[in-house]
Length: 139
Image 1 (cartoon, rainbow, N blue to C red):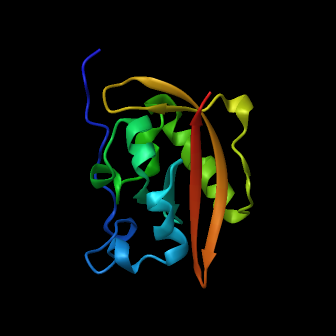
Image 2 (cartoon, helix red, strand yellow):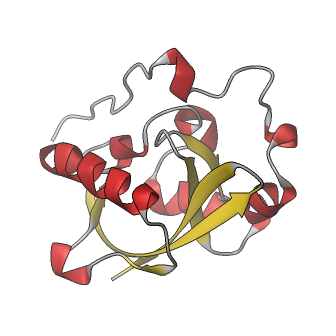
């Protein structure tokens, strides 16, 4: 299977702006960057704001390439629209929980490889901002 670029433009308002560097994210978010777990943190718009090194290794993509991109770029292309709906629903009522294993979640690496995963979602509320940390393991 040929490698493909899973990145696509993200609306300007969903991207991290130069003024929103990693150093300006709340400490409750930035401390996850150094986790031994595979963690991807997104904002309410669905943009990736942080990836731990184990997440980069598991998903086969660098944080540099993913920060500012929609998290759906890590979802198999045939499930992206559905994932957007699930994500919006989750942000409407965030709570710590496992992603429904009945959905058989998978991640898609940039080379097209599918990775069966299990995901625990943990909301992080800092003042008026809401982020979600996805703790990812293989299944």
